[in-house]
Amino acid sequence: MLSYDSPVVVGAESSKAVAVAVAAAAAPPQIRQQPSTRMAAPAPEQARGHHHIFLVTGPAGCGKTTVAEHLAQAVDMPYIEGDSYHPKTNIDKMSNGVPLTDADRWDWLTLLREEAIHRLRDGAGGVVVTCSALKRKYRDVIRVAAYFDHSILVHFIYLDAPEEVLLHRVTQRQNHYMGANMVQSQFDILERPSADEKDVTGIDVSRSLDEVKVDALARVRDILAQDAAAETA
Image 1 (spheres, one colour):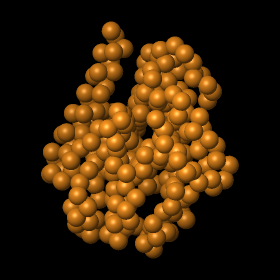
Image 2 (cartoon, rainbow, N blue to C red):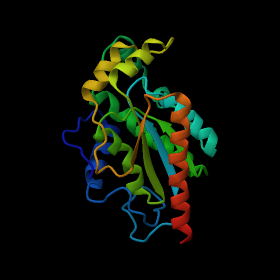
Image 3 (spheres, rainbow, N blue to C red):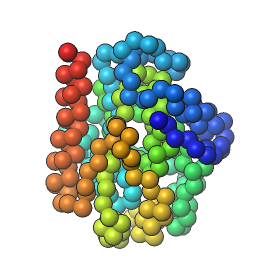
Image 4 (cartoon, rainbow, N blue to C red):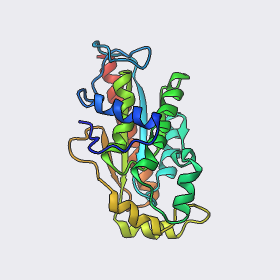
């Protein structure tokens, strides 16, 4: 179920995204139905030929970029670096140690969703996206893509580790606007995926990077294989 409890409206596009997500609450995003040809009400028939959006998520320092780049290359899908789509105002805030609010994130999340859909419409069978997606309602913004076009399946690869592990990793980074002081702020608002979020795969990233990449790729390939088997059944 989508979870827009207290949406913050920041402009027409954000308001539209929040309203759409509220409407989507009546229909689980993973129902596989006939894809619509435009952004309209879902069609009732089951789809064939799915397109996949894999979002690699988690707090700062969890290794989103490294894991996502590995996945995109291994399964030959376009890669979208979510941080590159933040507006300058967001980057300036984070660079100065100021945590982003819900209002700061709505348009960014909507832009990531639309960019992923654009790549799929350009012919990609799937796309890999990095996005912190710290709250359930942030994840719901992306799930809207599958509500409007049932040829799309959305999957979250959640990279999880204790705060102290991620804090150590962030302190080792250089030339990145997300400083160590921001890790605490992200954990303050973090909503770990709940059991009813069936489109989420959790991965422990306190292990070595090589282990994490192998595990993540195995999960993605399993998802793709299961979908391919269902398509031919």
